[in-house]
Image (cartoon, rainbow, N blue to C red; front, top):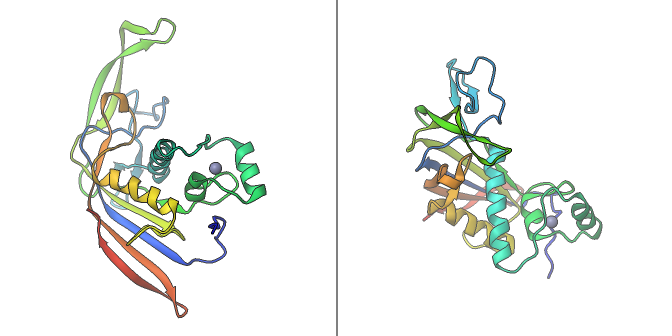
Length: 236
Ligand SMILES: [Zn+2]
């Protein structure tokens, strides 16, 4: 039996996954190479203003989703499935024409198919202290350290808790996955719980390692015309 992936005409099952992401190593989700106006550091953190008039660092949902997608891609590759570039418009178009979507697009979407996964921005649950690290600039022409060229970059200290929330639409992940997309998502969530996922910059030196703490799932389904919670549990 083939599973339809373009099933957004009706909502059958919604799984909400929540918890706290804790960064075990310094974390920086930056604003690119361009420092914001008036910024004292070259590579500043992305911040969002809160109602109390303070700006705090945050991890945008789309960067978290991007991390989960590439994780799912590497798991799929290990399983021998063919994986294509998310920005390969030709593949996205031919998948849409044949209505035969790959597992990754069937989960995370493509330019032609909406995503079954929604990841919300992760805001600090308390304070998110930062520090500024000075680095030696790399000369791009000679691929080596260029003496005297310094830059500064802002990082969030380890041990900060970030509120995590993710919705999965029309894919059964809990209590038991129903198709290969569900099984793939279970593996991705499992890696988050085990603290094997990195977000943000400087991943090659181990930065941005996060662990999902106090993870929970709730499954909602339409029953008799109403949306009801059909199962819930802890992520272990
Ligand atoms: Zn695809």
